[in-house]
Image 1 (cartoon, one colour):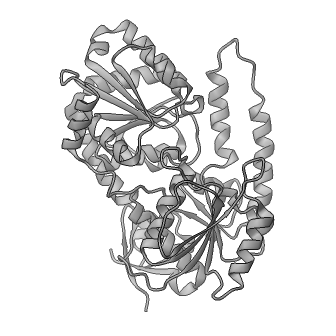
Image 2 (cartoon, one colour):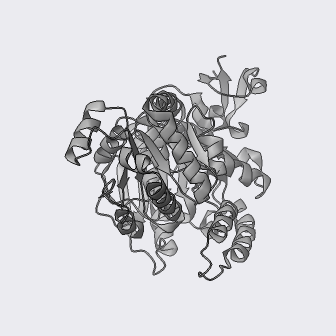
Image 3 (cartoon, rainbow, N blue to C red):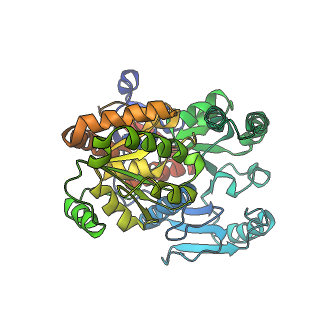
Length: 444
């Protein structure tokens, strides 16, 4: 019997369907409301990920790997994780780590992990599903694995937009980059080897479109599952927000608190944010005196931000629980990234905490996250445009931001929770093992 599922925000033409084939569904699988655990079948899953995250130094790919696969383990599935050594290994009965030393280039040793995998695959029950985060398992090993899915957190075609932005904002004294030429070659290389992976999971709607339209992967092998974050950690908590402000001495007189988080490096757009704030603080004393900016993270731009004066606080890297308090303390979260790849977790964390968000007008963001002004603000990656957006936020004030934050949280709960992400991956993995799980009957 085909189980019933509900889903939201789907085009009217799809809503008229009684059944949907998961393999050819064109939108994000997060739109479906799948049944709660237990799953209809427990799976033995192999994961290949270059690095398992350390506590405060995790990139987006590593955080995605940990959030997703620990959620799958909690649903009862057996996980075998092939990765390099880490100081933050999770202790669960059904989570098994198979560690190896990285190559000099920082990748997994393909010969060693393949040998580990083959031993486990031929001992007892073979793996039901193999999952690789990006090229954790190289295409030379994946080509004959029909039960494999790869999650892409950034592809070369997306990076062309970033290269264009970098060139446009390059200072006159800086040498011209040849990244655009090199990137075009990389795109061609990816188009050639991507078909060696059986199933492709795009972490944004935009990436899914590129994989089908530019990389020419058949639509039944491309699936969109948006990133998700732990909704039990990232949720509104006004009291913890007040405690956070008190801890760092943030006066109640400030009418607006802006927040930024993540790696404070060039490709995250901090040169744009620094210059926009420097100009605004210089030309508008009222803005300067009424606004405070909190920056959570580390990197070379942290020291430069401190040059802007006492109303900009660089807090350093924060753990997840502290980061949740940070979001509760701010009025709006700003992500000036110029890296047009993947789906940034910080935006999703802020939305689940009930905060409105502001980010660069990149396709992955505008098509999946900030889809309307009800959720937040977007701006083209120029200093002039960023200043204009910051002034708009300032003029709108807290009342408007709180209303947008409520809408952002509602959207976040529908799409960006770890529970929704894990349920979508689980159903895809089940579908990969058997066609019986691919047809979904929809309740309208």
